[in-house]
Amino acid sequence: MPYSEEERLARQEQTRKVNRFIMFAVAGLFLVVVLPSIVVISKIAVDIYIPQAGERAPAFSLANQDGQLVRSSDFEGDWWLVFFYTQNQRPESMLAARSFRDQYRHFKDMKLRVLGVSYDEVAVHHDFVSNLSLDFDLLSDPDGEVIATYGAEPGMKNISNMISYLVDDAGVIRKVYMQIDPVSHAAEVVRDARAMQRGGGVSRPI
Image (cartoon, rainbow, N blue to C red; front, side, top):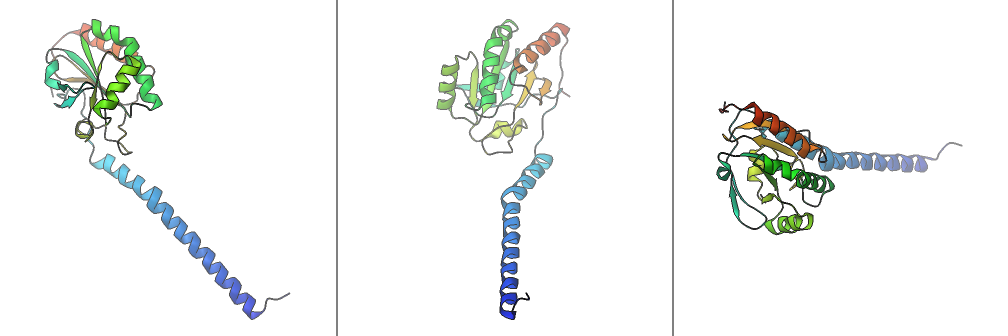
């Protein structure tokens, strides 16, 4: 049965409304999801520089879980590892912290300092260290300046990317870890540091 002219016009108007709704929905999805992702990817591709092995480790000065200032210059003559991680209460961060805690005796034997860095405030670090009985410092970088300097600037606000730098007693980066398994990372660093220390020699920044 053919539609009357009035019914045909009503159906056309309904179709236009549906099409407008779909168009606005797609545009909204682009603005909310796609565009921010493009911005983040562009920022990572253009702005973020990751220090490389053979370069001198960038200097920093941050407060630890007790509010005490920790400087990279404090480790002159010692090996150290700086580990940038997401957030204290996230599962991957808790796994990594426990792993470093369980391996810490090996780091101590090698006289290798371990430092964790995240956006978390000093008080949050204090509770985290206490709850997990950690033997190493967690440094607070709420402004993200050191996190950005070391190329761990996040794709999500206030959640650092997980990346570690093994630094020798001359202050030179010996290895950069970007693909991190939070369970096995500490043991991996122990193996690498032992091999490098046994190798001897003096590092010079490139």
